[in-house]
Image (tube, rainbow, N blue to C red; front, side, top):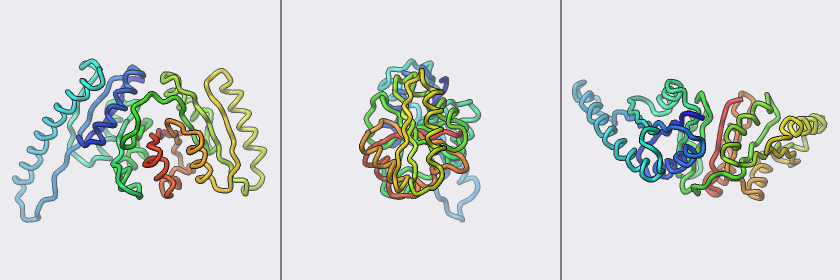
Length: 277
């Protein structure tokens, strides 16, 4: 782990999430790039080009000043050396610019806070976070509002047993090992789905053999509803982080389109780590 990108809008939620990013940076021995993306406020169609340009210039000055203050607070609160922290102020669309900068600096991880509103993902997780998770070139760690700032001890990887699960589990281990956390790979199997039970058990045994020497536990749980089963497992076992792999056939979209996400993030205050298979 080398570089963590942390986008901030200077909100209370961002300040809280920055403490989580600092905690990860200390344990992963990473440097942190603090990013603010600014844009032009809504302007009238009657405003002249030079007025809009002045808006942009003023917004940049404000962003630079606010980021300096945010950085000073971040360094003080997280006890990180100043030479491990850098700042970037960029103009553009937030989601697109975060992804662009992540590629530009070869970020190994993006850490973002949630908005903490109600129900729909575009309110409480934010369209920016959703877009970044889908397009980011690296894993994205979403930190809910008021999540406890503690090193994760138990990372739950919700495996769908599609694509390459060995590679996916290895990606989770890249975080769980340096954090000293246990990786629990859980596959929620819909018992109404026919002729897949044997294949599921084969995959469970295969992963157990593959990661026999690592802190990895593999479980298969039969439930009538996959999403409900995952929610129940989380409520019962209380993991510190929920890891999800993104690929064309993943159930990530289904999770975000259901009300159970309210439990995952808002009620359980459960951080979500997403990555591409």
